[in-house]
Image (cartoon, rainbow, N blue to C red):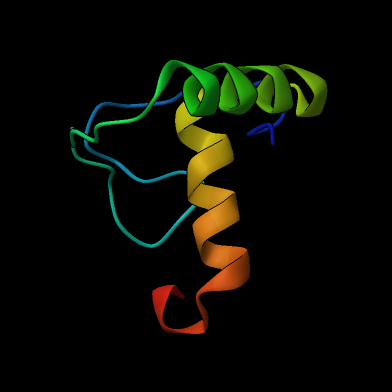
Length: 63
């Protein structure tokens, strides 16, 4: 997911969603983490953005 050419990101100003992201921590196995990274590369997004999209897709209460 891209913000589009010419759109500069500004810290603490949300671009893709209605709220800014915050740093979080999760514990994952190496297998799960590598799978997330590979899937993110295929979709041309960061691992963080891939997880965000996955959660929003399968959890209707997330937005």
